[in-house]
Image (cartoon, rainbow, N blue to C red; front, side, top):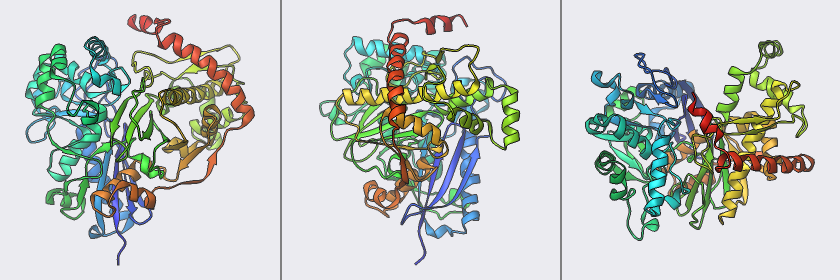
Length: 553
């Protein structure tokens, strides 16, 4: 009997990835990556219409090109026949969403809306709705809204609701003209299947949709009275324009349409799983199938994911959703808004040309070159301490208005000193998240990591182990989210009865792990205490200088 395979599609911030996976063992037999043609729109729309600060948009057609280019390439590279591909799973960043008409066509593709920024796809990292998020937080506390305690006590600018409020206030016509506002993942599933579904995992974390356990037997979005107090247009939008059949993780959203099957070279009717959040689907890829195991998904940003048998209102987390990550457990999400983004910013803007030339001479890319130089430094040798808020703080302060900082610079500071300090700051931020989890009564028993950084940068992972004072296991796949998406595709195709069975067969970690080095851990313990002082002083109201000087721009 011929081997059976599933496709996993992972939509990130700058590119989409597709892998073809053997359903028996999770082995990847082919992969393809497509960078988005337009990247991230931060300065202007494609027609030149300027964008204000803190905007981050995307072009929907770029996302469709990932489907039409990567899937045929998988088939060509692997030689696998379409009839042997039994399912498709898909994930995307969230909340990344777009307004569409009744036929699912993005409003930005219509001539009359092409120059209107709110008609385009808003990325998760669109932080221009921070003012709206602050007002939503204040009103929720004033009204003592129950939903907020399950989302860390703060409305985050990365969620869909504050972004919808921004649209309602700045361009209400878009709210009126849109038939539906859809998460990118749900929209892509619709393009594949013709079915409009609403991923309950995404709705739970990014739209604050609560299941019965958090609301005395009632399900739903935040109360209409609360939404109406913010904006009648927002209330109408939430109540009328977030439609779609509810779909749980691992559920088949539908089958591949004949037209799309022909376009991709696949078999019509191939089951397509409900959409999922990119970081969340990585959980089963490393073999996590029980509570107490924290996964760090390290990439452009970082998500920290943890499942528990109990629900606890942990302050500063991004969300607590029943069945949101693994069935039967409460899934906790936290994270950092900038990890890889921070390192990329540094090498693009702050590294001297002499270092670039030296890296080229050594046959290394600049990140690898800086890593090698930073790896020769002892813990604490840089004399620097940084705050990891270069794209705001996601957890546990939930404040996009906070900014990065480096303390201790002098005339002897070298680029590798700063590079290492930035890495260390990300590890300190993760330790803060873990300590908040445990203080809230949610135990962290084991720590895992996945993503390109986890596979490619041993120095960074050793620093994480030293700072966290924990052993860290690394996922075997360098495409953890795509593999996890494929595993949910296998469940949708009924190859496995649940994601837990799929995890046992298809999820794996590397044989070796990173363990803390005692002498390094002792130094980092002292530095982390100083990090905490800075974190609380600048992040908890001791001094709002970051926001005051930002206003001068």
